[in-house]
Image (cartoon, rainbow, N blue to C red):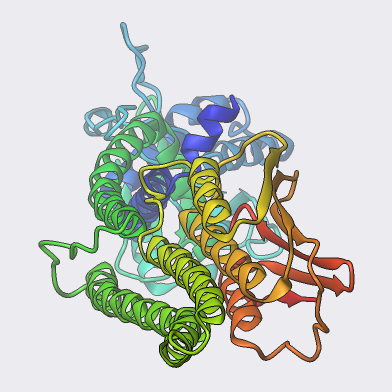
Length: 520
């Protein structure tokens, strides 16, 4: 489950589902707007008006007894309430299957031919109209109001035409005059549509049904559109989800492919391959990022080359300093001794022989120093050799050349460390042992490589005369060690006294992003 959720967090799936949701919402809104637009004037559509009249006509058979003298007012009011509620529910009027009952008691044959609305998934939609403002009235053949849904607006036994608009009057007058025996309607007013038809039994007009269908409010339009949308909802959901998922996958796939390409090239750069990003498009943000990364890697490559050249210069300066401090001084002493031997060889052969032995020792010592320096210039290749083995070989050569015994050991479980940390440890070891050989007058030293839980520790100790750390803090040897440690976020501790000196360095297994050092 966690693995699946982890995959869904990827940008590709986030974009896909976002596009799918956006498609779903967009199509829903479009469908809703289309339905609202199509239904805006549906209340005045002749098809809707004639179907409404047909429904009321079919229900009018229940008024047969209520219209006989004396008129049953309660039955008429109940019929109005029931049929107004029926119309307010806005059902999908469907002509029932099978044989139809005879309807020879109310509307004549032309009315029987009025079309019936079909309940089809794509054809039958609710028609919005104002339920509160619409009116339903029953009047006598003389035009007297027998009942209405709003008695205050249409008082009982008042003349119906006195409470109607001019176009509505024309509709009712047409029915009262007997000029039309089926439904008559007017739908030219933008606020309502009106209809009237006679209730006929045995060729005699029993009553007149009048209805004013008022235009819907915005809320009623939206509710009718939503109700009409429900039958199409399953097809809509399936279509929207499929379309959104397909196009979202294509869009996200193209996007994530380009991001993966950037990841691939940045991984190469981390391994030292500074090849540029190829086939960069133009125009979008990823392209701008690719161009910026290409420029950055070019600058990075130049910086690394500059750093390599600087490192070479630093090594040359250190080598020059070592030559000056050791080999040059010893060769100068050899030259002075040879001059002295030349003057003593006749006058004092024994003294000359003694000086000759000293000069031979100086030459041997200078040769060892020079061998050590040459080995320093050609260190073990750490890329192809383990750090521990490289240190062991170097310590062995240094011990032979310096005539100072060395104890070398490693502790802890071996762990992988960055190549630049390995290089720093190796160079610091060279610098520390070189300082011991030249300045400490030590007879023994120890080198310990310790794999601690949080960092790797290098400790170099000797039994020499020691020094004052403050007085030599700015010396080239100790400063070089401190700088190398700082380059890889290492910590340097110096403990020196008459009994000897101990250098302790700690490097994290992984570099710290904010840089800096802690030199104690």
